[in-house]
Length: 268
Image 1: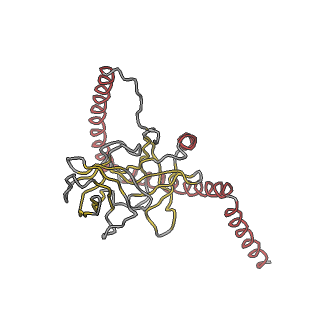
Image 2: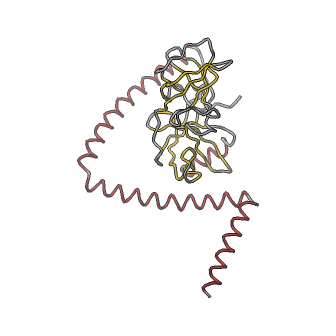
């Protein structure tokens, strides 16, 4: 009896695996169920940790939250002023263009492959996911964590997958230094140091130096402009362009929350 149960379980899982390989729609449904189960346990752990902090770390939490509220109030006032200036500018040039980016909070639920920390699965609220699935299937979205560029995201078989800065698939436009030299994050060419990312296709006539800051240019519709990326550590001269190795500011590989940036700019 014991062996019959074992044989049944083995055959059951083999059938599931074969069906997933043949039918990608079935595979997506199975993986979505797995995501929901994983997020259920993650949310449970979050509640336990929140209970602990509430009862045992109140003083530190209150001090931290007071500072965050003060920072938030300042940012809110600055944002209000920027909105007012933007509205006034539009009225002066008689422009009715409306293209404000959207920001969605997502959780990195798991790494795509064990032992590889440059690709993650992202979990969104159900209504946000439905909205993005219906309009963004072929689009690329930006990822921001701790106010710096963290990578890009796109849908893979109805699931939102994140490609972090050091992933080969991660690519987006950047400015370099005060002169705003243009370049593209391109990890198909690996840097000597695994901690660095590669920025290529920088025009030779521009000035790029070690220590220059790198930030998104927003011209490709992936990020908004001026999100910090990292600092130039090495400069190389290729045959037709310059290439730099950049130490990204986003160094953490822990699973957590990220902001998904949707600029709503159609790809050309």
